[in-house]
Length: 137
Image (cartoon, rainbow, N blue to C red; front, side):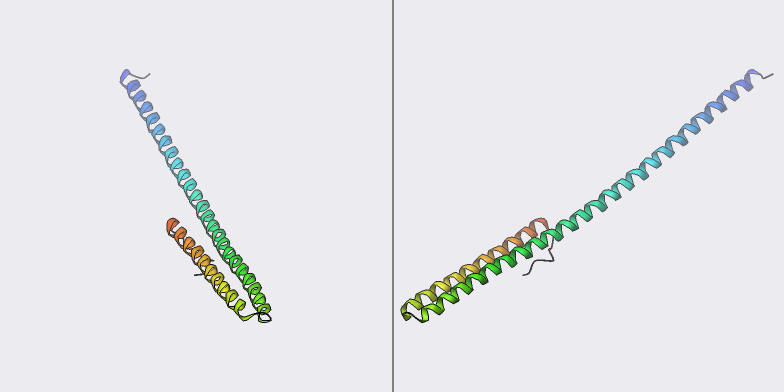
């Protein structure tokens, strides 16, 4: 038979073992929770990095395509102006000078539009602090 002191010691040891096991389980759960949180954060960071890179690539493509479209439209305008100048060679010289002045005005307007476009792109890049590889400057 056990004595009261032995029973008290056994209860104390059993309680201590239960507390120790509960602390171990809680620490293990906290460690796994921390590892899971770290893994989740790393997965989210990787997703955002990939999304950011995709956004930058898409933005760069849009910029370069838009600039190419502007330049193509200007080239078409210039071809039409040159064809018009050719027709004026058959006509009166004074009218040709007026058309040449108009042509120069159009060229300056085109350059101003392109400069404005490029300035806007640079300003947008400074705002979001992301260099775009596709843009030509």
